[in-house]
Image (cartoon, rainbow, N blue to C red; front, side, top):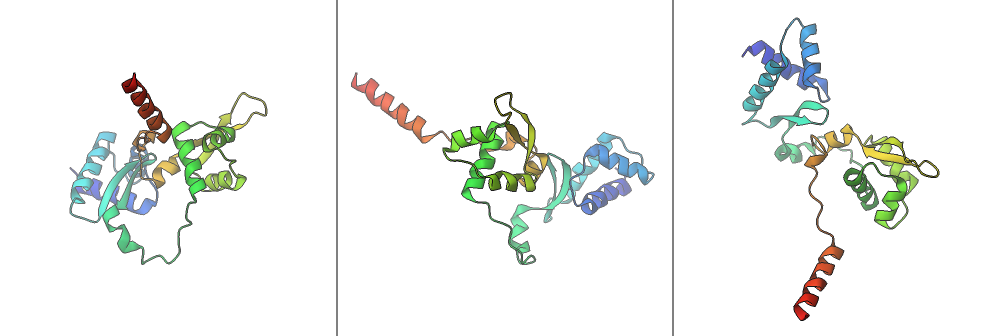
Length: 189
């Protein structure tokens, strides 16, 4: 494998500051006069993964492409570099984004039905400003409510490649209680 090609791919990932798709890497390489097939670039990425095995860095494939990042085991050491606190996510906001992620596309009314409380405009606005959700359409119902879906940036921020990487939902408490009642009833009969 061409070491210049590998090092250039590494430099692109390091300098980009955002994830890059393989096709985007190929276009950037061509601007530098380096011609590479998509399979060659994938081999470069694999070579870089091997290079970083004993390092604090890793190549991560996420929804928007590939990025060079610090391994999560080394994240605590970085907290001392940044004094600013990341805004905390409230329980209500976490519930709202979770419902959108698992049930998308959903309307605000759908979210309210699931949560059992109204969804504040600020919650939706906050998720839109973070670019974690987007309006993906409008429901064919009275008032034409907006349908919300998650974005690639949401997946990128959670270091996921696609929605199937979300953890499985736990079985609800109500379902467990009903099944235990059913078992008790069947044993009594």
